[in-house]
Image (cartoon, rainbow, N blue to C red; front, side, top):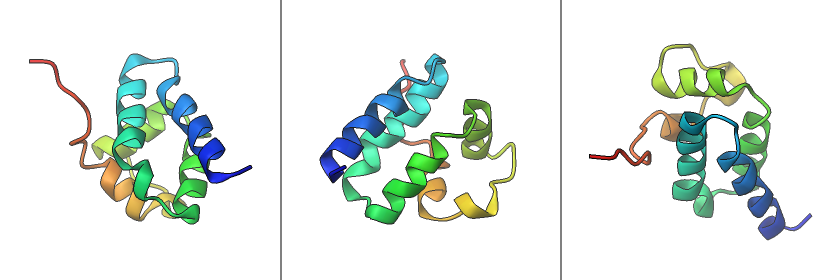
Length: 88
């Protein structure tokens, strides 16, 4: 599968998690950062999407420890939470 097709699939999966909060967190993160990812980061994000939303959200908010295999660039940026729009 080519890069463009992989990214389209990932965008759909990131925005269709089943819970609005997870959609905003994971989908917003994808939209803000996917363009600069290399192949290894795309693979890591694909693996991350297999995890439970509550775990991903806990890792991003710092309420649970991040498993060693996810520590690094993607989770470091995910934890900033500056890509989630907040209605005022």
